[in-house]
Length: 486
Image 1: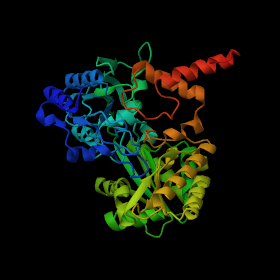
Image 2: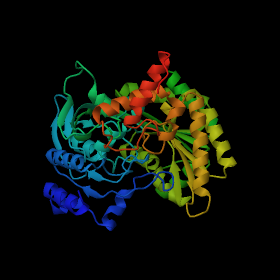
Image 3: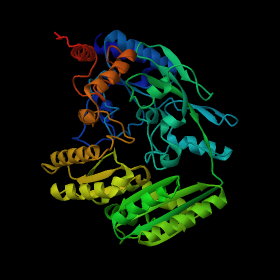
Image 4: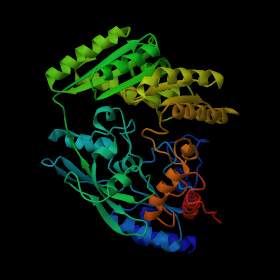
């Protein structure tokens, strides 16, 4: 099928205004939120913007007939290259499928299309006493479909869990064009948990066209506390002691001095400029319980040499403290033209050693590194500040990134907490998983998509794609049986 025919067929499906194919229009779709130079860019042959599930299925069927790969895309805020069409083909942009179809107060659920903005779901359900708990820092822009693809997290996932804990069912278009439903309103079901497999699969198993999500009742009381420390070690110790005391905050965030220097002059959130680190601690629930936890948290922070502990109960003050935290990435432009945001996880007890190692890497590679992260669950986000126009900067960032990843894995950490693997970390998968592990994962992917046309070149390093998996599994089985594999 030639390109002109492809464009014509796509326009027949979604209309002339639903297809982008001119080079200038496609330019924005070559990227996602990942840093230039760290993740390859690639141009699709065309971008289709469907408005119905049936249109998505028709596009997938057309792509299959044309032998073209398909990449699903939400708002493009992802940070691992997951929405980049590595092999070209068709991008299905789901941003026009943005309806909140149903809010069920009795079952505490919402049925939404994939293009619904994360924060808009919370704002829509707030008058009815609910909110959508997963809250990535990009929640003002990111979509529910993208959250499902990456299994997104956020500050409040310490208490409430990541996206998969709030998805009850999915309508999905499979790689062969079929439309299926997984899961449902009832808790628990027989058979395989296909919903759990699809959430976090980065668009390689199917394209989400509707999501049945769990809504969380708004707590009766909320308290946000800001604790400042003269050194990062004391802030890390306070983090461990708060959790160790049996307190489960809704959120427990840390920002170092470099982050504060960027954020405070921009947003005037009230962070002390002379602090080496601050903790932002939110508790919620019954008013008496929240008050008691606040007193205990303040005492723990003071025992860990906090220089100040301040409480914010008024909504405006809480919102300002959170605005500073959630806008930290945007504030980095005050310090450098570019940043590379990392996403790894370490055990909480390893935070002091890890942050010390990040500091060593910063000095070794002559790269300023700001730390702003989910301290409560050990989900680190080192921000490497650089100028991609300066020769050698991108290379140093990538080398320093590898050092951080390897260290975090060596001390028992994980490759990613909430950003996914995409193309950014696929070559590091062998640090964590054996060949058998990867073959099993790829086998699952192949059971959904034997052709490998859905979001190719993501997650798996070379050697674990499509037909290669069958050979690897046969070789591994032959070795176990003592048979020489041809």
